[in-house]
Image (cartoon, rainbow, N blue to C red):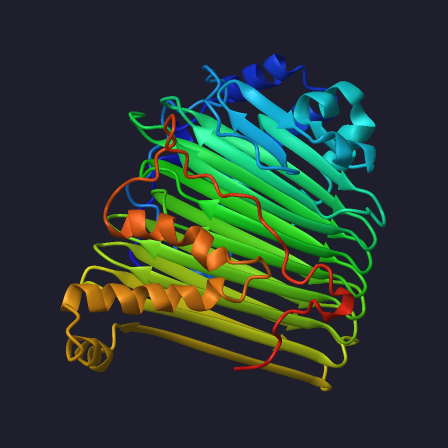
Length: 466
């Protein structure tokens, strides 16, 4: 994929990071981490693996003048869904609303201000898993650490008696704004948790902005977790997602990522299935138009025995949009009876669109079953002709085929009716309208419900190999 190297060294000054640390009253450990992270951002290549540097695409990205210290008024909010925790990140800070029933059940939410006030030990735990010198560190993950100005730590106790639903909303509403958010999620033994991370923009905001997301999930034994990301800011936002997870014994975790907005979007998912019987699903669906680009890399590492892992990615690209999807399933030597599957497919709806799909298997154990599939192609003309023969106009036929292509992913999410919940978002983007955060026109999702949470062991992911 063609690339052009932006002038990263002119984007930011160390004084911006120093000022941010002073504003947030960083303890010394955090202050040093910020400086190390900024230096790593300057030194690291856009793509650490030389085999894939040709696919890096950041043409037109320019964050000169963007600052993590930008402040503003709080955004307005829709009514709170019954029984849900709502966390809002905007120019005014972080706000948390929690029902009394969940607080009494032992669910805890700490903001970045709480964590920094608690001292070094709490900060160390909050930053656990971020290794600024490790092989997994990404250039923009380092930038997100340097600019970290929001955060939340969510803890669900062991055997929590009720399912926990969390809506995490981020709204970019100011020019030259940078929001970088660290989310640390602990799902206790036999807990049930559904989280939505939703990113939007307020209308009328000009210039490029930055959104950084640093997420880590740790699941206790026999827990069930679904984490849904809806990325729908305007087309002037450069975004970086860095996700990591550790799946415990007989636990089930689903990452569900849906990309509708943004200018340049990069996502890196690292999921380790450490416990025996662990189950990990990584589902991604992207709709790109105009000059948008989506660059996604996921890695599933099977460490325990009798584990299941699958990654399914679908992208539809129009205009001059770009897509890169890379997946790696690694099966360690002792990970016997593993089932692993990678599926990466893209549909191109214009001559200017482009996508690359690259699935990889690393198998160090014989007693496993692992497959992958990949394709990039234009819409099938025979399918279009079939629909036209039923009286459907060609443009509507192409749209129906594209929507069905993306629905393949959403129908496999362990969330009740997720395809229907997200269909208005896809309709808005397909028709060329923005998903703007406006008074009375909030695109936020309603409450989410895990599928089959009352059925105990019957709640399983679909691990059939296709």
